[in-house]
Image (cartoon, rainbow, N blue to C red; front, side, top):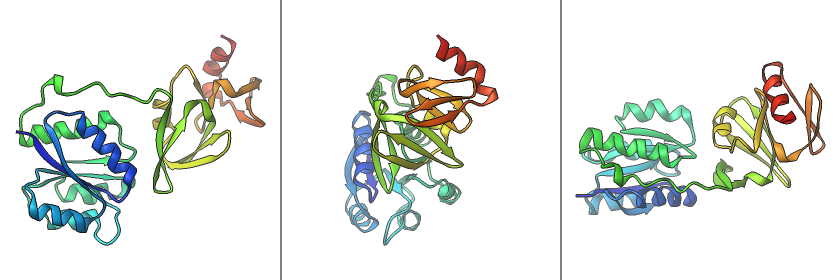
Length: 235
């Protein structure tokens, strides 16, 4: 029997991404998507739901409030862009806590947690290979998931828990660590020059032992990255 689930999120793009992930797993069925807690409560009163993917930061009824009001037999996987809500989510005995933007691999791990706790292990054949975007990534900015094409990126700069992505025509700010965003970039196209900077190899117009020039900006090369940076550039 399939696991019947519901998505509750006030962001249309976030709902679409989760729905596409659910569609790839044969033993999980999406009953419906809801844009707020009021819609979700109506569905939960009418339908038998096993699992709910629940955004925390929503207007009117927050995900935490909704989670406290649903029947314990309906399990919860929280989805949010805010790390600080994680502790509250686990206090409510949630299956998992997914930090946006959510990758398909991380989604699968959360689904498997559900099956490990409340059902049988999904056969390997039920886990299709993720159809990754080969030309870009989605990042969350201004409450939207924005597609950033790799070829448009000039450089990326870290600002503590945030990063700035500089493209040919805009600067996108997203809550993300530079190490995490680095792992999502094609290694043959990007180069880490500093703990706070990543540059597009295609956008480098000149370099010295101390900096690389990208567009009209000089990006520093730190001592710890210098050997690797110069080796990559020289080869």
